[in-house]
Image 1 (cartoon, rainbow, N blue to C red):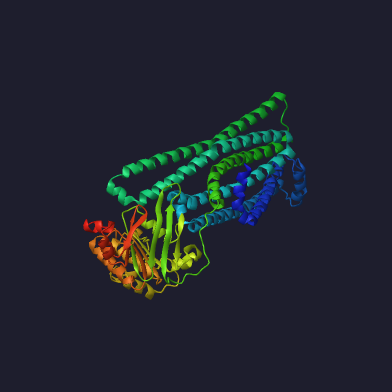
Image 2: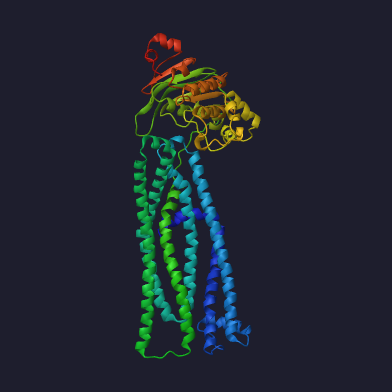
Length: 595
């Protein structure tokens, strides 16, 4: 295997190296017992041919003979069988311990890899996610670590089989050198074949399977999350066709993988039959008769062959499976070792807005694309409601993402009370912000849990007060189990207005100093909009509010309205001022359009 591959494997094994060291010790004991078990068959066969008083061939058998003889009985065959049983029980216990330790190590590796990948994902900048598919991230975070655990389960098994082969080979070499050499050549040939197949077939098959599996997960994620739109537009068959193509590609890799795993075993079985036939033909051609003294050696050779072939087959299969699982390990390894984008983090503690937030020449562009925002200049005064209006795609949500610290300006700066935003500690800045988006993130949990949203130390009374201020308490208490009612996946048991009021209660639970509403009423009907607007008016008292909206009814009472067009602010002022200026805002108002 390539040096880089072992580096990948060692990266996952290193945190549990002492556990793997214990596994190696147990494997060595198991291999020693394998040798002793094989040698212990000599007394059995010798008893059957009346040679119980003779030691078997080889130093190990000769050294074992006095020990066995000391505990002998009037029935040598019975004594030999007794020792076989004792050794077999000891060997079974050691092998169970080995498998337990291997499973323990693999479970720890899988759990650690998952946690490290997920931890990495939640600490990278938001913009990093914009360049990646959710399904691929899910595969790398959940499925690939499982394959890493499978890989780390096969490595000790591979070593164990190698040690067993060595143990049996040593016994045969001492008892029948010629046969041992012939079997050794067969084993080397088989090992070389599985290595080539592993490198050239299994690895590439595993890489293709991993990519197809990740693409399957991405398509399934998109299909299930967008099932409503897909059903309404009647395009389910198109999505199923895409999924069918990826699934077919995965199937082809799956079939290829399992087919090539069977090839070495078939070749080994044919080779073994040819080898046995050759030994018999060679013996017959020599015209020699099989003496009784040869029977024990021949019997042990048969037992060794029975043990060698499964071990050799397992060894080859494990090598190929290891190569097939390696691409997933490399995928996780690359994710964990790749340079992680740094998130800007300051040292100042933000305790609340004292004067204003200023956007000074702020420009933003996604990599390789035209600027979404250009030379943005606007001030959000403390204690006032500032509204951003404009058509879709003018950069309103991008500006909000910049203010939340999810994106970094390409040029210009954002000042908070005259201090660049990057100089504040992100946690203290966000702790003073309540955010409500046009698509509230409601999880399959209780209404109370959706308001708390993972925050610790929140009392039930605080949850109720937040719901009352957000005009959500009435509909929550009308639910079958009140605040303990499960609201369904993505809040499917609630109306759009109820979801938004739940999100508003979540936003004000921590009594933030600044509130941001990003198109909070854009998807609601007239009645729901009135209910949500009433909630917004209630929670906006004595707070600094940044309001992004399309509808005039939402923004006309704002202290300041900034109109965006093509990523620039083309005018700003109060509703009355902008109407007097008869600019773009006035045109929208007189045309009856929503800005």
